[in-house]
Amino acid sequence: MNNQKNSKLFLWLGLLIGVSSTIYLILYQLANKNKKSISSVVNKYIKISSDYKSSELVKVENEQIQSEIAKDNLKEIKGIGPAIESLLNENNIYTFSDLGSTSIEELEIILDKKNLRLANPQTWSVQAQQAEKNKKKSV
Image 1 (cartoon, rainbow, N blue to C red):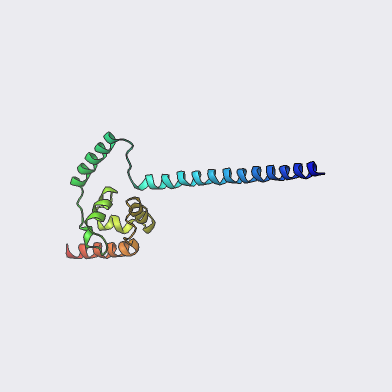
Image 2: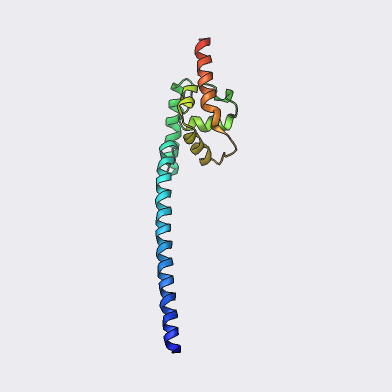
């Protein structure tokens, strides 16, 4: 009788371990799948180089592009300082028009990548659109 109780106990223990490890494996795979999908969104908007040489090339290309593009002073937008302006420029946002057409979610992704979570981009698009209108009126 005692052996029968022990065998039932081990049977239930084995089932419990098997089911819990299967659930853990499924959750682990889902978490990795979400990381891959999130990283694809981040890579779409933020240029991340894989090695030192390619980062130099990206910087040179960005410098060439920046010299050809007329940039607006994005620091006129409330909440954007020199650090955030350079971060936006690194992500090909140079003008009020570029900033106005960028969604809040995209801006939050850009800011989160550099751990600038205190910045609040909620009104930047509206402010940028207004600044673009003012710029057109003055020209």
